[in-house]
Length: 258
Ligand code: NAI
Image (cartoon, rainbow, N blue to C red):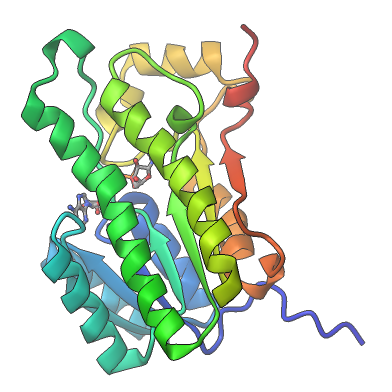
């Protein structure tokens, strides 16, 4: 008999940062459907409450916590609340992020800091907090960081975002190396373009649609459903021997013809 536990998250506590919209909200539902207790973290708690209610109505277990990844105290408090309600967090989806297209000559110190502070420092802070608690409890865990294909290649108007996401890629590999001895796996997903609140205006425009047709080999945006398999692979025991990997989920965008 095949005893592979597969993609199940039964018995696991999963904390999702930036769970109030887009990829985070979607994958939080997916984690619940896979059997996890889900901790929804973001700054907009009222939106999280709605999602938590929705998950409970489908028979899942979920809680909403106020979480600002740029603030150490807020991150620690969110993990404390999660732990008090559901036990030590086993799986983290480090998803919170912001994006703002700006040419390099126009980026202010504050713009630069805002992007780096959320997209790179925040990922480090949440991952470290999760790992410290897992190591202390001597429990295995999985950290899944949402990077971007812009962490592997570059695009005009995104120098701060590209630098932060490239940092997430290297951070994921470094953490994988150091945390393997604690049975904590760290991997990254590098999404291509998925329509969410971050970019919907652009992708609804003729210019945005032409860009996708012309540059993505599969000639379309991704659907959030297409992130489910990669996330569950990395989060669950199905990926038990994977650490330090960066999975591109991008319709071939990274291998687009030069
Ligand atoms: P989104 O704007 O719908 O979601 C981002 C979430 O992060 C929101 O819930 C927002 O409230 C939260 N957030 C922002 N700053 C935060 C903070 N300081 N503390 C806590 N939460 C905070 O956008 P989307 O697309 O779902 O983005 C999710 C992740 O995916 C981001 O890291 C983004 O960079 C990444 N990504 C998205 C792509 C796309 O095409 N949508 C492509 C590649 C990467």
